[in-house]
Length: 556
Image (cartoon, rainbow, N blue to C red; front, side, top):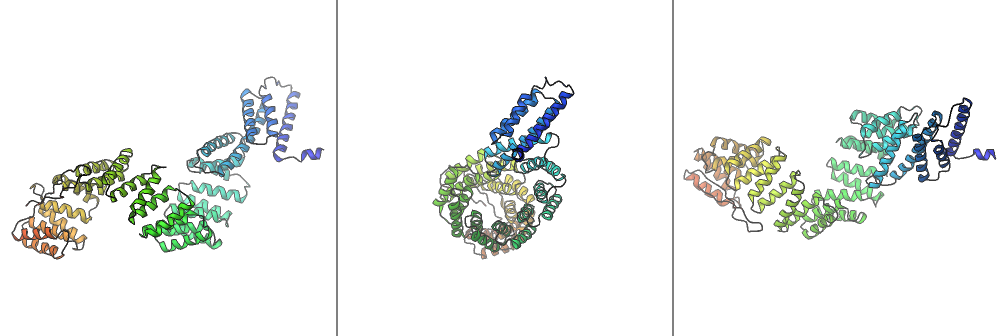
């Protein structure tokens, strides 16, 4: 019978050994005539030992933890307290290990998993506060802290402590190095950890893929691709490696190679949505919208209602002119999630459907809800301009500039909007700001030169500066744009150099620009009469949904 009794589980054997140790300690204490009357937690300790020995699940472990903590709180003799702490550490480690298995089996984004994770972290910290904690506690805490939302500093510290443990198995050391590499702030230290992990486990393809992902995050795409290539040499049918290879080829702008990798991955893992998603994005970028839609359809069969894919398919529908389908996809997303990208896309679809006022209302709501998102304001301002509401556009661009004074597009666009309403001094100031941010932009060079050459306001015109800017704009565009040649002609006319103005104006007319031909001819006629060109745009503010007025009014 005694032999059968000793053939028990390791946990039970440990507990029995500890119990025998306590009994021996008590006997020693009694022999030393030490009073035990003040050992008020002893009853809870005895009950905790019984619960721990007979534990069959997490509920029993929880009860043992509560009893042991209560025993320590009530007070125990030093020997009993030491034993209770050791037993409590063991129970906490057992509970943490069980809960870690729950975390591993579920999505880290699950709120319930996050609650469990916090409990495990608390348990592990308590274990590490005791004397001689098990090394595994440092490892598990480091692993949890290395996850998204964890504390990388604490992760590094406890994983370093774990790695200082002597005689660790190579596989455990390798895994700890991999975990620590993910939370290193110094790239050289991270790569050193990767190297050490791969030295200890050279055949672990997963570790090499983790290093490839790290290199990718540092935009070292070629190095990452080399790592993936080594994995595929060892395991040519590793679908995850093929997917990562395809994504790296995408980063390197090698779409044909990317498509080949994704095609191989799909043959190996036909139920994996990622290759379909990537192929769809490649085709969308190539403006092969029907092919893109077909790929997104496959993703949605595997992941019905997936928001990102619905947004991407809506874009493909939009750019292929299938506006109703685009709107249906976007509204399908917005029924579930108020994604900014979906709101913006809905507005774009509505604008394409000539429902501009609805598009404006959409962007007004989103911009109001997220005032720091300058891109939303920029899109709203554009719609105001298209709808003949330049003053509202100016107000929107002004909000962008408050948030980001370095927004070249906002300065340029507000300057152009000021031109539309004839406020030339304000336009010049904004276009000068835009030019400081992008000195070689031909559009800004041209528009600023034009107002300096043609404004009816004497204090605005500057012929010398206009010639300088217009010449640079012509150089930037290789003298190939009729409207920019027209600006150069206007600048020389303002300077009184009408022969040169006629030369450039004639070149502009000779380009037979169907959009600007009549005005170009009128400008040439003016210069032949030795009269500089004067122009002031006056766009009246329209009511929403009203017909847009004529864009410009020219005065000489």
